[in-house]
Image (tube, rainbow, N blue to C red; front, side, top):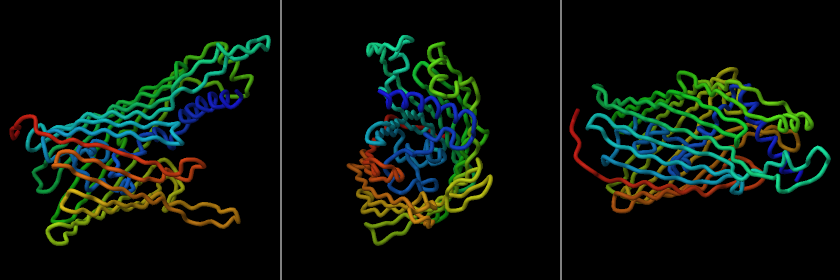
Length: 361
């Protein structure tokens, strides 16, 4: 009972703290989508060219092999407590343009609300225990276009963000991403400007007198209507493809996440700019079977003997393409030094098809 009450207040407190500070705002949008990218430690900004580009680099939508692609992904974190879902559809508008619609949900469901378990006279009534969800939603509308410069494509996202904590609090936000990809021979380059306009989430709370009293009795700060700010992030990527005969190929890519919200525990840390590098590899056979690996999340940690050491996050994965239309990807990914469920098994699906001919515009 006590743990349930603490979990409830902790959930609201986390959202309140987010509303006061810009660092790590809207972090559910930094988790990543698609088992391919997660297996490569998210090092795909320069090379991604399918429906998942709506998240990683919308300029890559130009690379769609057919005029329609649909993708789905489900993953769970912290022993299944938190669930992350992604779905998208991408489509070519012409030979020179493409668009997509994506939806992300990251949430914790069935959280016990025990704020009314004990009444003013100290009586316990379990019928007063209810449940609620704390969830983050993002609707992403993407567009990409081929430029007159050979090998250069540009793109952008418009993001609508909705976050809720049961019936007690919610927020609405809006943000813009801009991106580009450039291909020269076997070299791939990409840039993703996330939240380039700065994303604002306006929080409002609906707490009755009983809830406010419960916050006061437990020493918690009563949440107030406020605005949460997500500062811009720049992701740079460079990669190269290698061919070994007619059947084998290798893609290598390194990305650099450049944050502007203050000093972070990454490899290159400073205030206000920090740089987090990560590397991904993809080895393919006949463009049908893929073996992937990546390394990232390099951090400096203090060991039990007070000696500081650098740690890193490894990831691996597999991919299979069936009849050039159905892609099944798997990632065995470290979600980062948690006491439970260190690794998650992530699966994602992609289906490609042609629904009609398109015209050059």
